[in-house]
Image (tube, rainbow, N blue to C red):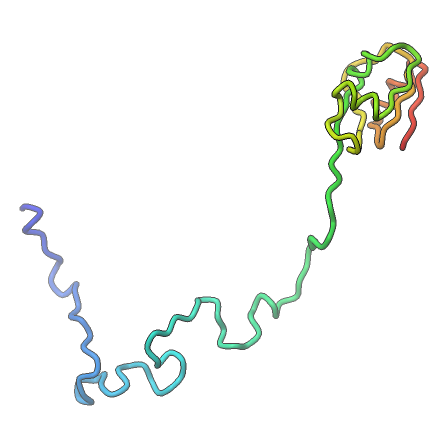
Length: 148
C-alpha cells in the first residue's frame, strides 16, 4: 500500500448536501434554514455568547467576591536593619538621607524597615512602616523609631 492508494473506509464519507434543488429533494425552497429571522439570511455571523438580545447570563447571575474598583496597592521601598549600620552612632535616619545614599529609589516613595541582619548603633529611624523584628532590634540598641 502506498500513500496515493489510501482511501477512507466505505460509507464513512457522506455526499455533500445539495440544497435548493426542489421540494422533493428534502431541502428545497428555504434550504433547511427555516422561515425568516437572522439565521435564515445570508452572511450571518453570530458570536457563540450572543443570546439574541436577552440579558446575557454573565449579567443575570449574582456577583460575589472582591471587585477592583479604585483600590490602589501601596508599594513600599524595603530597607533592612543591617544597611542602617552605615550611619554614625546617634544619627537621625530620615527619608532624605536614605535617598541620598541610594537606599530608596524615589524621593517621595514610602519606606518599610525590615528586621534582616543586626544593627549595632543607636539610631533614630524615620519611616512609614516597621516590622516587629526591626522595632525590637532598633530599640534593643537604645534607638528609637518614628512612624511618619
